[in-house]
Length: 483
Ligand code: GLN
Image (cartoon, rainbow, N blue to C red; front, side):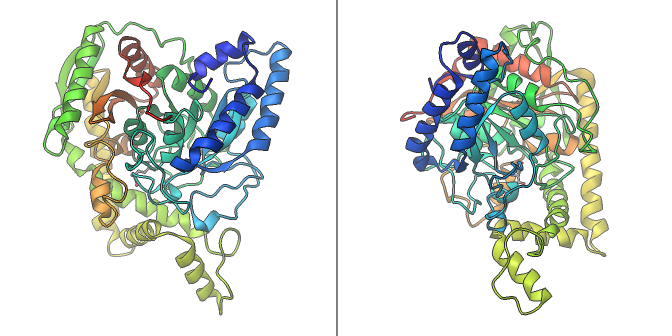
C-alpha cells in the first residue's frame, strides 16, 4: 500500500479497496519502523491522523469523492498547526505550539487530507542540505551517508522513502526543487502569491512560497489544487482564479518552445548532470517540443544578490523572537539586554545567527546602498532577463542543481560552498516565477533533477510537461533500496 501515489490512493479509496484509516495505520507503522534511519519527522501526529482518517471515511461513506479525501500527507514544520508543536527546526521554537492553523494546513484539512506529522527541515528554512536542524540532520534514502537537500529535506526524504505519498514544502531559494532533485521526486514552487503564506513562519517574505513534493507531476497537481488560491489574510496572495491543474496534464507538447539558457551548461556543472538534462530535453523534443537557445546574462549575479536580500529580510523577520512573548527564554536573565542576548544566542543555531548578522549589516546605514539597494537592482535585471527570454519561448529547461547530493558534513565548515549550489534555483524566487524539478536519471546511484521554469501563473504548463515526460520515462518510478 505504501507504494501508491496520491492519484492511485484516490482511486483505491473511491473503489473501496481500502479505507483511509487502514492506509493511515499502515503508513504510521512504516514511519515508526523506518524513520529512525532518516530523521525525516520532527513530530508524528498519530492521534490527529487517525481522527482525520476516520472522519474522511465517514465523508466518503456519505458520498463525498473529493480527490484528497483521506489522502495522507505531512507538513514541513514551519506551517503553523493548532495545538501541535511548530518548531521551524529551531531550539527557539522547540516549545511552541501554534495557536492557529496556516491557511495551507486549513485548506488541505478541509479537502480531507490526513496529516501524519510535521517534517524536519533546516532551521528557519536556511540551508540546502538539512544539516542545520536543531533535531539533527536528515538522511537521503538513496544513500544514507548523503544529504537529502534542504531546506524541505524531511518532506523530501519521507516521500522518497515511501513513508507517505506527498508532503508540503516551502521554497525561498530552491528548498522544494533542490531536495526534489536530490531524492528523485517531483517538486513545484508556484508563482509568488499563488499560495497563501499566512501561518507560514517567514524566512524571506518576498521570496517564500509553499508548494507540493510528490513522486509524480500528477500528484503535485492534486496537492497544489488543494493549496492554491487567494487568501484575504495574506496581502501578497493574488486574486487570480485557480485553474484545474489535472485537466491539462495530458495536453500535447506539439510546438512547445523550450528555451535552453546558454549560461546553464558552463563550468561548475557536473558533466553527468549536464548529460542527463540534455537527454531529457531530447525526450521532450520527441514529444513535439522545439528547442531554442536563450540567454540569462544576469544569472551570474543571482547568488550574491540573493544572499544579501534573503538575510536582510530574515534579520527583520526573526527580530520577533526575543525571549519575551513566545519561544525559548534563557535561564535567569539579569536585565532586559541580557534576556535578549542570551535568549537569541542560545535559541538560534549558527547558520541562523550568521544570516541575521549579514542581513543587519547589509541594511545598516552606510551599507544599505552598497549592498541591499544594489542587490535589489540585480533582482530587477534578473526578472528582465526572464521577461525577455519568455518573449521567445514557453518554458526554460536546465539542471536543478550543479551537483548531486553531497556527503553529510562535506560542506560543513564552508557556508559559501553550499550557497553556490543554489545557482540554478534562486533566480525563480528573485523573479517570482514558478519552477518545477523532475527526475531525469542518476549519477552513480544518486538522483538527478531537471528544472522547468515558466511565466507567471503557468504552473499548469509545468505540470503538463513533467507529466508527459513521466508517461514516456520511468526515472520517477525508481525507488531507493531498503525502502
Ligand atoms: N538554500 C537557500 C538558503 O539557504 C534556500 C533555502 C530555501 O529555499 N528555503 O537560503
